[in-house]
Image 1 (cartoon, rainbow, N blue to C red):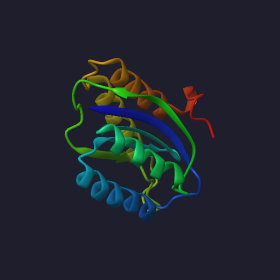
Image 2: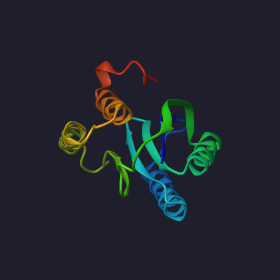
Image 3: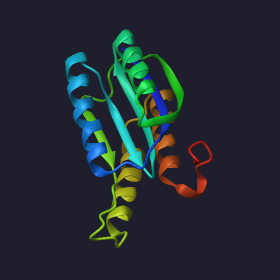
Length: 148
């Protein structure tokens, strides 16, 4: 089993349909290649952990690098792991509603993601690094790695 974790910034101002398209493409590609992981999108930035066969993961990352919707890609970690930690493909994102812009939804999303990152199993250094990156990523004020 092989894992790769990266961060990136969106290259254009995405709309909800762009995110839906990314999710649909990811579900199809990842299901067909037995790739699992977690993708978090917030504040124009992505952090993702991928797991599967090494060649499939590296091929997918090359595809992501060529995707015009991403820029400033940076691999945080890659290497062999003893087992798969994400049994399903997941994507978490917050896209503010134009109709209901009270920030309650955003606060709920941030709190839920931070709780998930705290209570998820972090039995390996790569998983601990991924969830620490997610927590940092969600905190706009302490995010030097992901500043635009």
